[in-house]
Length: 99
Image (cartoon, rainbow, N blue to C red):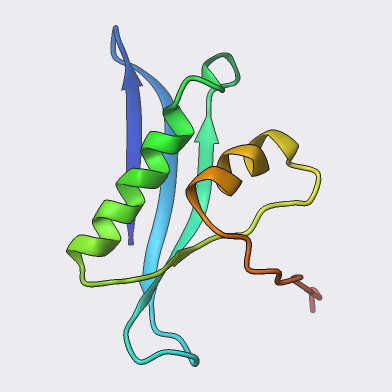
């Protein structure tokens, strides 16, 4: 598990991410799930999200992990514009059911 933060000049937190390493049923080595990614609304479009994703990539690589994945809602147009630049959409559709 890990988290990263990005500070703006003046020591203001402008973005954060949480990620975790876990086993998978489809690969032998662990994988990394990027669980949360948040950028302050007034800082969006300025590279904060990209820097945080790249930081997660580096943390995973340092841990010997070769894959990072995450989910987003189909309506997250701004986020998906960034994600399409830094990753490949794998085509999965997620189903869930609360019990």
